[in-house]
Image 1 (cartoon, helix red, strand yellow):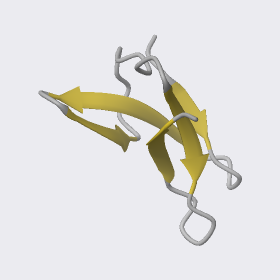
Image 2 (cartoon, helix red, strand yellow):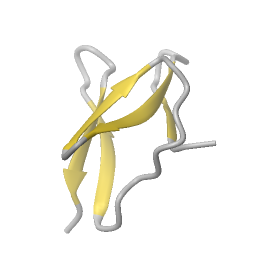
Image 3 (cartoon, one colour):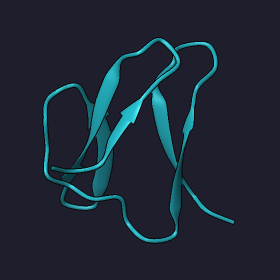
Length: 54
């Protein structure tokens, strides 16, 4: 099972990778979160965003 994120609305998103592009979808995936990155939630839409960690 890959990396999942559940937003404040209770919707579950799965991390996907296409070549060097990472994105979230509601379809299951086996992709893991790359080292050095964190996930934050867009307050307006509830969509997850992957950012480089500090």
